Length: 440
Image (tube, rainbow, N blue to C red; front, side, top):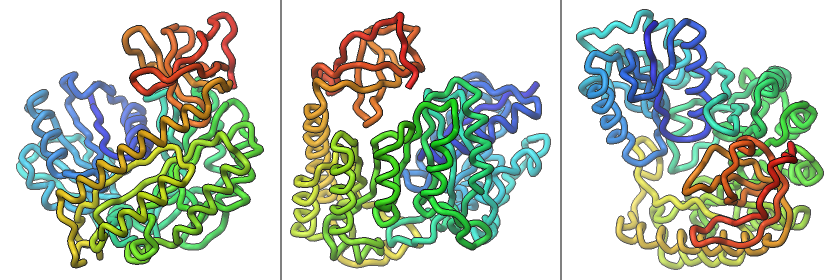
């Protein structure tokens, strides 16, 4: 029995796909092992958004060859689609598979025999038209369910349409079947993932279903306590969807909504499909219906042409907006994007300074959000995340909490009261009673 190990870089969508590919191997009789367990085959799923994708890829290949000098190394994922030739020339790489080929690993590579030259299976991105169902399982407390892939937006800074192709989705009925399959396991929370999940519903190039129909249908699936919506574009987050989440018992009050900039000038330059006024309206709508809702935002600093005034527009906009935390990215150039050709490049040092300012603001926003919720009762999904005799988990509105370790509570949902913020920035809770676990 050959041993195979997987390593995933990047987003929740990549994790869902890696998990599904690993199950395909197990069904064919391969033994899934950890990366350092001397595998015969290494599958490395790469990301194009992550900075220094090439360096991370090379480092992982070197490590793989140290562990198993004769091991077979295959590189898949977004970076593999964008730079197949460059990756094939990395010493130790045996195969590179692009977006249209990665789910055909077992068919294309057959016996995984090492050859003199790396094999490359990477057709043009226009060939990536099929939707491949994927969900993670047994890897973490929560499951990532892929509902959508690709993107039709073409933002000036983004390579994802080049790496994943056009927007496409699975049929709702097939996703419900996946959800029912997940419900037969011990999973308590499912996170809906995709490249642009608000654009859900495009099949064979035509819109056939809507995102609101998907979440309404999933809400009826028994056996899953929580559904969480991952990142969703503000222009696709409708009043209807917000109102639905507000009254749902399964969809949790937590949204992650990319902003990227608080300057309308820069939003237009980036090719975003909304202005700051719409973003503010979405946040205010959420907070009106769900005052306790957690809201995250993505922000890019140092985009070409971003002056100090533009940056301060973003800073002040976010300072006054009731968002709960920020994911801050310093702009980095990506080949074959419009932004890479733009002038008025912001110096790296300035990008880093602005990133630091927004990360400090994020910590302040998060602490303020946590303080607002002290003394209130929430339900926490406790995870297998143990440190110094304490276990951790997240409330439905995405507050990270800490409690005394109790093995019975791992992967259980428990009603707790938030008491205080500790010196590590997590929230202490009333000690959960072991005898009466709560399941959603």
